[in-house]
Image 1 (cartoon, rainbow, N blue to C red):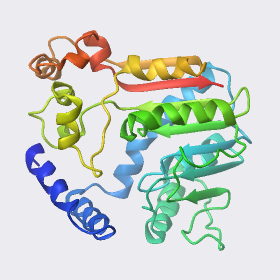
Image 2 (image 1 turned 90 degrees about the vertical axis):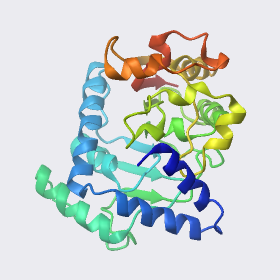
Image 3 (image 1 turned 90 degrees about the horizontal axis):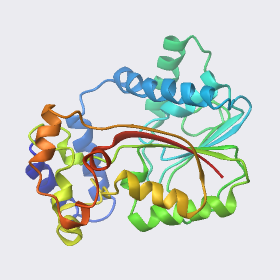
Length: 289
């Protein structure tokens, strides 16, 4: 879908009453998303494998640890990898929205079991059909709520969807409330979401706008801050997190995506950054409290 049409559609949804707009948004997402549950599960496996390698290199074993996931998303992919592949003790997964549905969870249980040869049994006491020791807490704001006693904090493509001030506040709270030695792993995708489904748009197109212009374009359904890699690092250092690992991908000079990026007339807020810093994507950073 053309990004202008998508933006107009989302802006129309925001005019609807609360809950009605969310219902319509879910229906639209279901209509346009033709990927199967298996395809969606397969798309998360590279995250697991990448994290596995990095934690192995850091000599950090998640076995019997307690995990806190910020941003559950639409279905519990990473909690299953944590429980059945990493062998963690328990997973607490939280989300500011409520997306999980029991019928989907039961399908995931069977799919993950068949694909990875793991016996998965739903906890009869769990209203979502989740296995024991995977605890889902929807309508949970990580900035406003206190952190439980955990060993490892994980987020996958969440930080870019948070308000800039909330990204700062989240790390301030983690620094104060997490026990010393706790590891925090963030996967970050700081690209313009309007590009999804519209290949004519640069991954960095939103860098052409002022703060005021961008605030008029985005909606709660496609909210995305525009932090560049140095801005995330500045926050991590501000609260004295030790950066144990950092890797990312930048656009290859001469590639189609790079040529689209070079056509973007950057707003003055972003001209101080290098091309490498502006286009850094698929970021994985591991921090230590």
